[in-house]
Structures are given as structure tokens and as C-alpha cells.
Image (tube, rainbow over all chains, first blue to last red):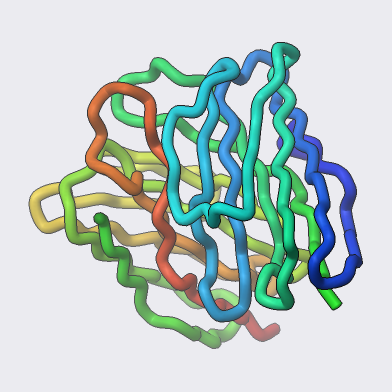
Amino acid sequence: DSGVTQTPKHLITATGQRVTLRCSPRSGDLSVYWYQQSLDQGLQFLIQYYNGEERAKGNILERFSAQQFPDLHSELNLSSLELGDSALYFCASSVLGLAGGNEQFFGPGTRLTVL
Amino acid sequence: KNEVEQSPQNLTAQEGEFITINCSYSVGISALHWLQQHPGGGIVSLFMLSSGKKKHGRLIATINIQEKHSSLHITASHPRDSAVYICAVPTEMYSGGGADGLTFGKGTHLIIQP
């Protein structure tokens, strides 16, 4: 158990809908990352937040948005869903400020199926 | 943007064999990550290393910064080692600002047969 929690575990929805995925980082971790894993694209970095502020953006679509709240949990909002958005969405957390990079601890993932 | 290449893509071996998985990347980095993903989907961080060698149980990771290459070794492999092993590096060269979303290799599917 990494200490990172994600809800829900599974989500089935229809095209055009909007969903919210939730992540709680490990106690003490200030940074949250969101990743998408699909069969055709593999694992891709979406976005990173640090202590409530956006720190880095990866391959995140305009239909997707995220935020990190004062209690450090984070939400990833996916809207106007398409079939191709079906994937595993992982959240990870780390403690920033370490020289040379930061070990990331992954949550169990949310499996999104868009029908 | 950093590119990550892993080899082999698939590896089947017998229990007890010494396993090596290789990873190459294109841009200088601050640290490289080795991750393990089990069939259930969960991802576990195995190593983060920036130089030399690290060992944890039967797992050994090495990195050569000059050659932009890392290897993951498994000694005395066991069927429970069967998983996907993924190499990852920071997406942008480390600037010290803490922006370090990862770029991933395609993974090595390892099967250890009893």
C-alpha cells in the first residue's frame, strides 16, 4: 500500500458526459501528479500540482482539468468524454525539494470506461 | 522532450535465471525511475537513481549517466517477479524547480516460468 488513495476504483459512463476522479496523496506529500494509461498510448503524464498550484503540464487535453485543494487532495475533471478517453488514470504523489528528483508513489488507479 | 527506449519488450525465462532489462534515454536527466506494474494494474516504485548502482533484495539497478543508459537486473528470478517493468525519466531536464512529471518507456513484459 503506497499510502495514495484514489476514488472511484471503476467508473463507467457514456460519451459526452463529465466525470471527476479524486486523489489523496500520502501524508506529508505536497506534490500530486496525474497520469493516463491507455492501450495505444501507454503511460502519459497529464499534469502536476504542488501545494495547490499547477507546476507542470504534459499531454493533457483541453477537455480535462485538475486542481489541488488546501487539504492537498486533487481532482481530475474529464468532460465531453469520448470513447478514446477510456483508460486507467493514476495519481502519484511525492515530496518536493529533494535535489536530483523525487520518488513518486502511485495510487491504485481509476479505470474509466466510456461507452 | 526526453525519449525512452526499453528492451526487450517481452521476456520469458525459467525460474532461477538472471534477468536483465535495459533502458536508454535521449536527454540528460537528474534521476531515472524503475517501476513495476502487476497484472492487476497497480504501479510500484522500485528504484530512483541518479548515479551508480542500487540494490534491493534480488533487484539491482544501475545507471551510466554518460551513456544515458540504465539496466534493471533480477537475480534468482521467481514466478512472482512476473510483471511489467517500466523505465521512466523526467519529462523536462531537471531545472531544480520541482517540475518532474515522468516520460515512460513502453515497458518490458516479464514472465518467469516455474
